[in-house]
Amino acid sequence: MRHLMSPLDFTVEELDQLLDLANDIEKNPAKYAHACEGKKLATLFYEPSTRTRLSHEAAMLNLGGNVLGFSSADSSSAAKGETVSDTIRMISCYADICAMRHPKEGAPMVACKHSSIPIINAGDGGHQHPTQTLTDLLTIRSLKGRLNNLTIGLCGDLKFGRTVHSLINALVRYTGIRFILISPEELRLPSYIREDVLDRNEVPYQEVVRLEDALPSLDILYMTRVQKERFFNEEDYIRMKDFYILDKKKMELAPEDMYVLHPLPRVNEIAVEVDDDPRAAYFRQAQYGVYVRMALILTLLDIHVD
Picture 1 (cartoon, rainbow, N blue to C red):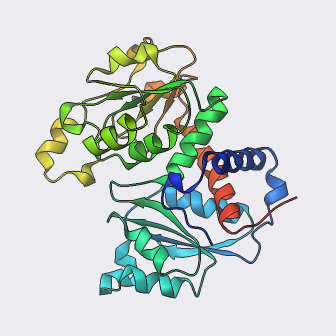
Picture 2: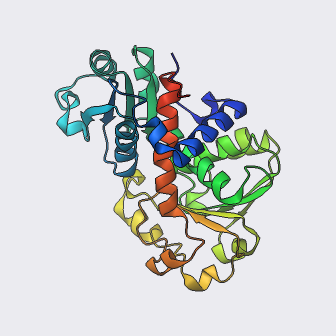
């Protein structure tokens, strides 16, 4: 039995197989429509989510399975004081696989130690968000045709952004990757990721404050929102929240074959006028998220479709 706690739980070869499977699901959805008949996915979401929870549920439903679960801690026995380990022991009696989001780092890891079913980490605090990373990798590979020899701009909240942290960990395993880290001083990438991941793997990177300085040299621009829920006080959030706004004028500085990604939800960091630009790929990215989660469910349940 396997779990997914981090993108590094899969080798590069296994990742390529997973992405190939997701591409096949995209092209041949009917072939997989009954693959999980009789199987149940439990979604345990201790903090709010739209895309991650619904895309996991859509993925299981598209495979012919069923879903159960809760969408907030308040609507679960956690409100009565039940521990994660007790909850997962109980859920293991009801479902075949589980997707868990939790505000505390490491909570899904605690769950997998007490679970008799596969656990998918659907986001734990500011730590990891591996299924979003799988979505990002599939999106980049589908749009650019490769996952190597790319210059990736990561913009916004690089300090608390778990999607950014997971994506960096995954991409450093490919050759020819270069990062441009675009953030205000207060939201810079944590030093442990710069030192333990980028420096240790000898991956070139540059830190800049102005988005305009980075745009001309990018293959991918990965925008992120400033996350209100990670700040300790309202004043700091208000001061930082509109630091970057990508608009039509800034997009004129970017190459014609650069794509804009965003894990969503966006707040103000991408102007609505950018949505009509053919390089705006964030809604396509959300669709790729369903395909890759379908592939992940099949892989963790060890279900093979001829």
